[in-house]
Image (cartoon, rainbow, N blue to C red; front, side, top):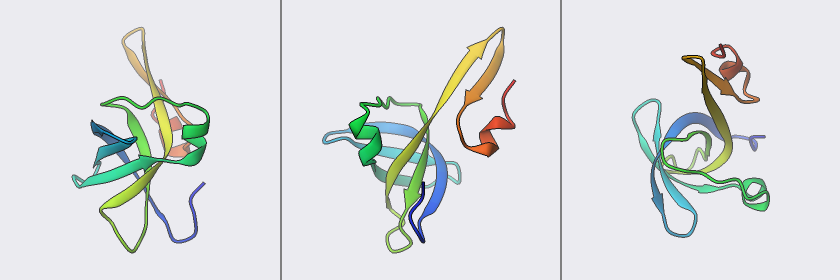
Length: 94
């Protein structure tokens, strides 16, 4: 869930950095430095390069963000399915 005033954007993990930091390539082409949110850290959710994620950006600093959600991409029977709670992703399933 986004905090008040935070901007949520989708992107792909480009590079893994030390201390649970990641470089995220956003869909609009910008590169952002992001860290894992507390809930993802608490539940030991692993993030690897080329994973689709949702990033929260603060309106004060648009170069840093927080990874708040990870989308699961499954390939079955030559179809790509995206399993995520984001309603925009459910339209792309199947």
